Structures are given as C-alpha cells and as structure tokens.
Image (cartoon, rainbow over all chains, first blue to last red; front, side, top):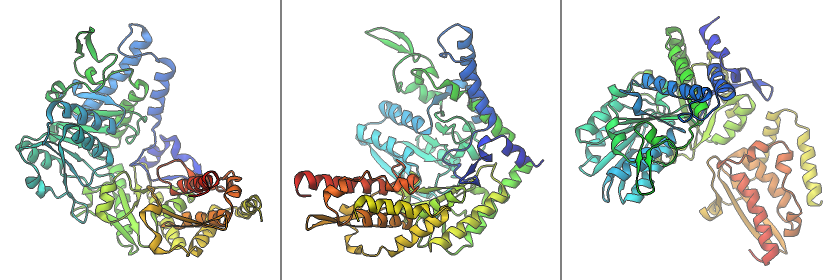
Length: 409
Length: 141
C-alpha cells in the first residue's frame, strides 16, 4: 500500500461521502480532520480517566493529570522550547494571543507607546492588539505587504522606534500561504529591543518550528489545525516575559495562597491556567504531534510537493484566475494553500457549487478583512491541502473548478 | 394567487430537480434575469453586508402594498432573491406577515441560510419581515 493510502486510512472522516460523492476536503487551513490516535486518546481520557486534573490524589485524577502533562512535554519537544514551564495551554491561537495582548499590555504598555502588526494578519492577531491599544492609549502601527502579498520587511526600520513595545506577525498567512522570514524579523526587532509574538496557527502545521532558533518571545498555535481536538491551543512564551506579566484570569489552581487581603500566584505554567482545563482535548495534542512527526518521510514529502506544484501551476496558468501569494523564489516558500478570485465570478457561488461536487473549500474574507481591502477584493476562494490529500483529489478539484466557472460565467 | 399558493408553487417547481447542480443552474438563470436594480441604488444604507455575498434591498409603498427591489453580487444568492421578490413584492404587510418564511428551507437551500456571519440572505429575509411589521404596526416605514 502506498504511504498516502496508509495515512488516509487513519482519518475516518476522509472516507465519508457528501451528496453521494466522495468527500474532497480542502479546508484544512480552517480545521484539519482528526487522526484515529487523537480520537482514541479523547475517548480513553473521557471514558476511563475523567477526573479534574491537578487537584485530587485518587487514581483517575492522576491518570487525567498525566495525560494532560504528557501533552505539555510533547509540545515542549515539538517546539524545542527551553523548558516545559514555558508551555501554556489555552483554548486556541486566538486565546493565546489575547492572553499576551492583555497581560503584556498591563505590564509594559503605556500611553503613547506603539504596537506593530502586519497587513497580512488574521483578525485574531489584529483585534486583541487594537483592544489593548485602546485600553492603554497606545498606537497600532502596520507593516505593509507589497502587491504580491509579501511582507515589506525592509520597512521595519521606518516603523520600529523607541516607543515600539511589541511586534506581532504571522509565521504563515492564512490567506497567502507564504512562509514569512520570521527569524530575520525577530533579529531585527531584537536589535531594537522589541519582543516578537509569532502567530503560528498555520506555521506550526507546516514548518518544523524551533522557538529557540527563531528566538521569538511568544509563539501561538491551535490544536484543531494540526489533527488534534478542537478547543486546544498553545502559548509558548519566554520565561522572562511569563514571569514578568500579571496573570490573565484569576481562579482555581492558578494560585499559591489565597487570603482576602492578599493572594499569591502559582508558578509557571499554572499561573496562566485558571479554572478546570479542557484536559481530554488537550491530551490529544500528544498523539497529534506524534502523527506530524511520522509525516517526516521522504516519500510523503515528495508527494505533497508534487500536489502543491500541480495545483499552483494549474491555477497560475489559468487566465480567468488571479492567485494571491505567488512565491517569488522557489515553491518551497509556499505551503499548499491557494487563495484566489475568478474574474467576473463570485467566490460564494463557486464555493456553493464545488460543495455539491463534494469539494469543501473556504470562501469569503478568511478573517483577514484588511488584507482583502489591500488586494482590492471583497473575498476570495481558498483551497488548503493537508498531507492526506491525493493527486487525484487535486486533479478532481481543478476539473470541478473549471466546470463551476463554466456554469457561472 | 395568494402568497401561500405562490410559495407552494415554488416548492413544487423545485421538487422536480433531483440533482443539486440542476437546482443551481435554475437559480443562476433566475439570478441572471434579475436586472431591474439600479446601480445608483447600491448605496451603503441599502447594503446588507456579509462575509460572503453582499445584498442590497430597496423598498417603497404603493397603494398599501410594499414593493421590494434587491440585488446581490453573487449569482446564486441573486437567484434566491429573485424568488423572494417574486413572492413578497407587491403584497400588503398583512399578507407578508402571514408567511412563515420557510420557503427557502423547503426548496432545500437550508445551508444558504446557515447562521454564519456570512449570510446576507438571512438578514434580507429578516429585513423583509421587519419592514412589514413596522408598516403594519406604525402605518409608515
């Protein structure tokens, strides 16, 4: 059996049909399907080891706590973080960024200070910073992208100044699919004393992330985009920041001692994990990350590259289509994520028709309205591939797209 | 034809299409035939904004009946709009309010009405109803 078939067999959802047709799932950048080992882990913890973590001394509580904390070790290993205390569990990338925007803002941002985001950000990496700026009287500044969607890194020198407190940038835009030069951005920011948060919602899925090599101050990602259960997320933060920032939410288990006149907080990581955690889902990060590790296989990587190159080539040579995020150098700077518009045809119509052909794609603003405005469109169509998508699916997608355009033109 | 009869006729017409794509072909044709909405009326006050398609809805009163006109930048949504206008435009507020507005669901286009922030169509139906209620209770818009 081919490796790709073995991989597909691990995903129950991939064998289902929609409207009587084989499902071709190309909305992986929004949510990927779940691998069997993730479903098994969730089931086991929920059915056998369901007890509140970190609190009780009984057997079930111990098993649940183990499953949760083993996920932390797996994440530390996955990101090559310096210590497990630097790994905070959240409900997702959005929650991770909100945590930093709030707590960092409380500790370090004052009136007249500046916060930098980029034009290619998801709303989740814009709005929390905007809210913080409003609370603190700070100014939000924007690093632009060029017409092709590449970050204009050379403009950083103009934007960073002595009032800049933090910069937030996406590792890979959920619209453009281009791998940003995050290491270079971090180095430049650090040379001016500015810490950097990296939105890794897409990056963690597609790049081998090494937070010590990137030297970023914060890295955020979600479980549901990398085959784990939904409602799970990670915030990596350098210990010096996590120690210096105040807690986000107060509540159970984030405390040292509680008195009515004074409360002390728990050490990392629990300082940032108030209340009962989503432990059964968070435990699934371990099998999900093990699955990702298993994808590091020459045959699979070559296959995925071929699928990406085929789709990229097909979309680029079609004169009816305007593709965004076209790589400037080699195709390796692009993940298999393709956002485009079709001349004279609305993205919603295309998505509705493709759906009826069994092809699931995303349409709309993709939670990146400023980037849509920059590109001069009201929305786009996006097909995002995972390593379990086959060449046959890619070919079927291109064929269906052509047919849908013909119907609508 | 009463509003209920007109609604039933549309439901019956759609039941003939077994294939999804045939249903869409029909809506696309309907959408293309809806050409009465003036470009100049595509103003922000008439815009029902969504993440996906945009819908513009305009209306006026004529002899106690509400006349609707609408447009969309997406053709399938426009086809559904064309159906809705055919049903509700030129009827009295009382007639409009006698409808349970389930016709879109009944012709199998329920996912076009999913409660996402995407959907201008959901807001359009709500707006038609709101306009009728306002006129019925206050005698003016």
